[in-house]
Amino acid sequence: MKSVETRALQSGGEPERSTESVLRAVCLRLGCTAATAVFPREETRAVWGRSEQDLAFAREQLGIVGAELARRVIDTRKPIATNKLKHVSGGQIACKLVALPLLARGGPAGAIIIFNRPDEPSFDEFTVRRLGRFARLLARNATENLDSLTGLLSWEGFKGRVDSWQRGATPAAMVSMLYGDIDRLHLINDLAGFSDGDRVIARCGAAIKKALVGADSFACRLSGDRFTVFLPHMNLAQTRQLAEAICREVSTGASAQRQPNHPVSMSWGAVSVSASDLHLDHRIAEAEIACKTAKDRGRGRVEVYQDTDQSMIRRHDEIGLIGSVREALAQQRIVVFAQPITPLINTSLPTTYELLVRIIDAKGNIVEAADFMSAATRYQILPEIDRAVCERAFQQLSRNTAEPVKVSINLSGPTLSDPDFLEWLLSAMAKYNIDGTSLVFEITEAAAAANLQQVQQFIRRMTSHGVRFALDDFGTGVSSLAYLKNLEISTIKLDGSYVRDVLTNTRSQALVRAIVQLADAMGITTVAEYVESNGVRDRLAALGIQFGQGYALGRPGPLDDVLAAVADRAPEGRERPFNDEKPFTTPSGIPIMFKMA
Image 1 (cartoon, rainbow, N blue to C red):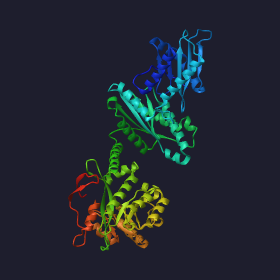
Image 2 (cartoon, helix red, strand yellow; image 1 turned 45 degrees about the vertical axis):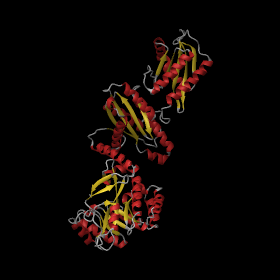
Image 3 (cartoon, rainbow, N blue to C red; image 1 turned 180 degrees about the vertical axis):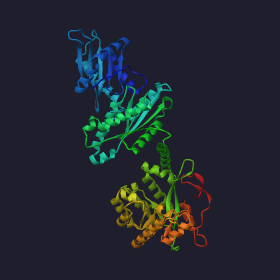
Image 4 (cartoon, rainbow, N blue to C red; image 1 turned 90 degrees about the horizontal axis):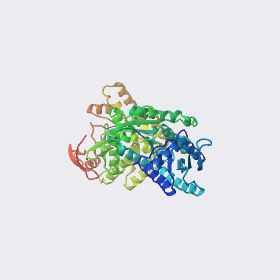
């Protein structure tokens, strides 16, 4: 142990109060002069005496022998008792003392030292045993709010320390906070196992403790590989330097050199506020945004939260959006819209519909997928959204008593990789009596690439129930043709980049014509998205595209309205057009008005 810092007890914090109560009990019940609890480089250091004179006496003795005694009992895990402590050979007895280790589940947490003046009673074996019981109590009190893996504070302990600091701070006092995340820990867990992952977490915790400055700074392991650090009276420049020191220690320190097989780095975000503006959850969220920006910009680095940084603004907005999406999922405020997929050549073929997700926010406004899908992808809730869309669509389709309507539903890569989704989907289809021949699932090349073997198994299982599959955004990746060969695809949907300029770009025309020829040879249906004008529709039909989808052919509308229009056909046999403006009630009963987009 390099050094042991002791300081007078500061009132107000829960850890200090529990330590003080035990030290007071030691002195009062055993008639001792003074006692101290020593926690090397940790949060709580306390000295308690019966009077100011006893306190001064204890501090003097502690300054001479405290560090050595604490080191010995921590190393040996055994008590030291002497009734004849002399500071110089042949000198007078300076004091009588007992030093005991504070043993916690994770090992020695510190030491307790009890002092008597030379003219006071000696410590006998019975007294040492009694003091051992006090030491066990103090160790339990001192470590109850600590994380067992890293020795850092738990979240509850961290919040208590922050509250204590804020109560004693002036409103203008400055504090900085850090939020840190271990980069790609999941790879170590996958490749080397969770034991190695735990060692990496412990190593990062040790690097954080090593970097802490002064007795007022403290850190917390939030969960998993996420950490936060509280740094009173530090500006952003100092905070950045401290975080960069942690980064260096994690990647190149002594502990890192002992584990060369697992290169590790951490990313950090920093934020600084005054005590009066210290809303803990908000500040941690801002530091987390900066941390994720650091990951986006290369990992193993530090970024400072700035509300003018566009990427941080986007992440801040996404956090708000993701809260709205989770709330909508929990309260079943998911709405399914449908957009027609219309035949371009053989108009006797039936119109099918692609189902599109919308959510209703807390104010009753419809939020389109384009506004929240990026956030949903980043925060990994696409599988929840896909299940909610399927469930809601199946409910509505099951109530349709008119002619069957064929629909397309988008499935994301994470959903296809979910091992439980297939059985859930089959169960939901059976629950609502959904005929598989009425369903087409749209997947992207990226979704297929994420887990090709599992996607192949998923498609084979579902096609045995009559379900068909479409390859969405066809032509945007380098392996589009390979997926036509390896997957049982019945439909390809051309990406909009081939469609938007098909009237003016001869290369786009040639590519569309080639795709049509390839699809015809393989018996695959072709659909063009983003058909935004009659001219584009006619050109695509001339090039051989069988179906089109876009505003020129039909705008999205609530699925219930589409089903009603199909059931109540106009005299000429075509669906009745939607009204431009109409009332709509959400699944939770919120009445809203919407205009068709």
